[in-house]
Length: 238
Image (cartoon, rainbow, N blue to C red; front, side, top):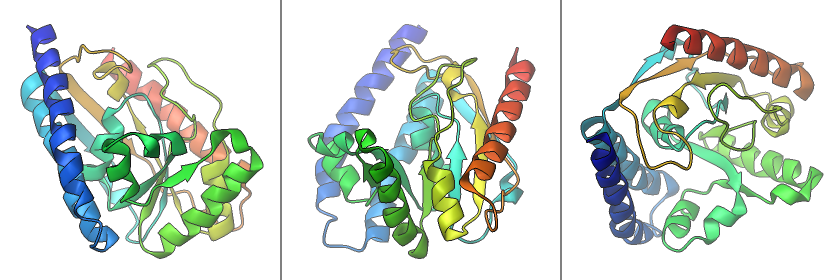
């Protein structure tokens, strides 16, 4: 039965993309916040379907840590789930992502309307400069910047070295960093059709102030908090 529910969920997800993305393209004359309000409605629809079709719910701890102004989020990346759910959990946001996603027909074109920070991952230092230049503008416009410092989805129980791009942006701009840990990969695994019912634990950590710190210091603080919290979440779930 869970296989059938998962197949239905994936079918509805892709059908909704084919319907919603062309509609989103018609928002291009409007300001970016209006575009965001419309396009993020798709994400809320997927969370509703995930809850009622495959039984994936979520619980958030630490909302009191969210600052009132714009911030940079450094988050664990295990699944597609968090890229969807953060649109409901956090204020209006942009993401640091690989530019190839923008080339996807319909989905990528709609994504481009939200002005993400699209980088060339193979560009080395130039990619970091792109994050700083574009990220500074997005933050000044009041958008939060979402960074997955591991660079790709990592299966539960595993970890990768944290990249420094998001921390460099924080050190250069002085905006605070919000670390986030979660276990979405335990329920919505990467590259798998089967979704598992359960409650995703999302934990928002205390703000890491970036003023007067190096990118290396910010990265070390964020990585230590996230990985320590991940161990706690996984132990609690086992």
